[in-house]
Length: 105
Image 1 (spheres, one colour):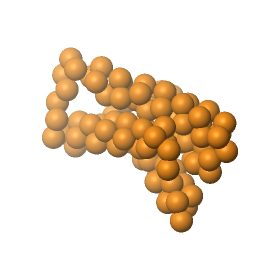
Image 2 (spheres, rainbow, N blue to C red):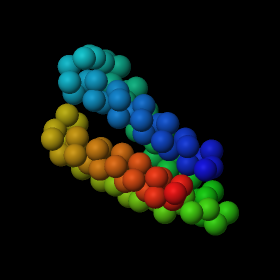
Image 3 (cartoon, rainbow, N blue to C red):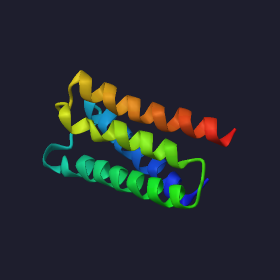
Image 4 (spheres, rainbow, N blue to C red):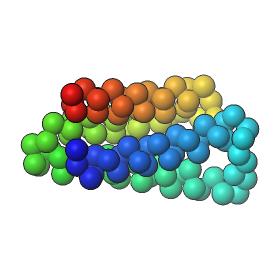
């Protein structure tokens, strides 16, 4: 498992946990919503980095990063806090987790 691939998982987990906490009402970011957006941007950047780095090295994890990136790219088309936003974010996490487990086995 490469560091770029692990960074996708770390940033995706942080963004997902923060978003879920806000959605459930456990956390109110108020004017600090930029933090969730920054984590999303970091997840996109790490997905691009992992796709390129792992692809260039022929690692089997690059399609997982590329697929996660593909799902994440559709997230801005949804309204934050909507059910569609939750479903797309959940799909990105599922693609990453299922793909990573499949590649590692």
